[in-house]
Length: 68
Image (cartoon, rainbow, N blue to C red; front, side, top):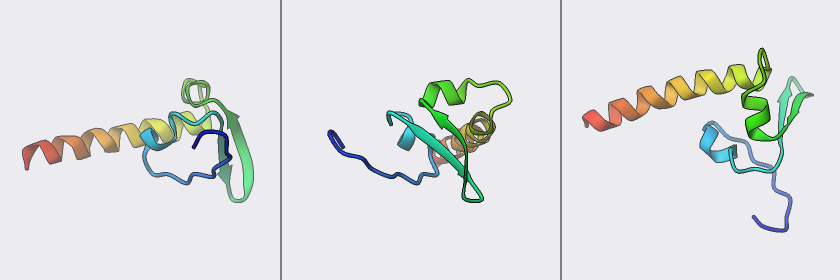
């Protein structure tokens, strides 16, 4: 995706962590935007809250797949 603009809708953090800019939209309104790490590390941020929950889910899923 070099030299182009792409809109990515993702359920996994790894999908958006390499994006130059992340825009968080809730109910059609932009609530946060910035670089992945800046948003993820923002204390009490909306994206940080979502990311923390997603990381927990991804860890549980990886543990389950290791057992298979």
